Amino acid sequence: MAITLTPNALQRVQRFLAEAPDALGLRFGVARTGCSGWGHVADLARDRREGDQVFEHQGVRIYVDADSLPLVDGTEIDFAKQGLGETFVFRNPNAAAECGCGESFTTDADKA
Image (cartoon, rainbow, N blue to C red; front, side, top):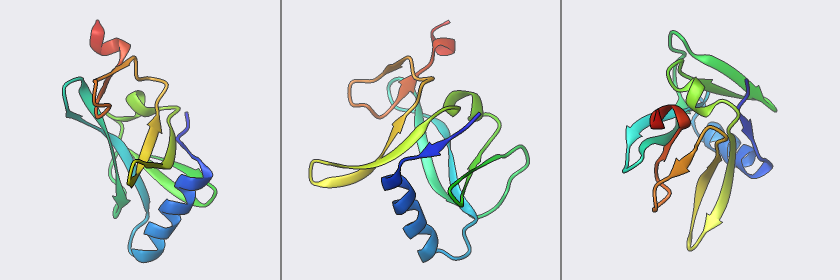
């Protein structure tokens, strides 16, 4: 089990953490959203919650709740320019399909 950050994502998260000294790390998971069902959620972790799995990538702690873990295990988080903006990009091996806009995904378990 692992969640990894590309060098660009690592640098961006480290910058966010430097600006928020009370943050413990990155909170990563999923929420029901969009037309396909699941959307990735990333924010600063301000507390450790019961059931969290904590991964560490080059000194950055990544907190994942127990319900999200099966849906995001193995995800690589990148940070890239897209058009005029910048955004996190999630390479999730558990995503079997994405909606047309790319905001949400389904897994093989969702199809069953």
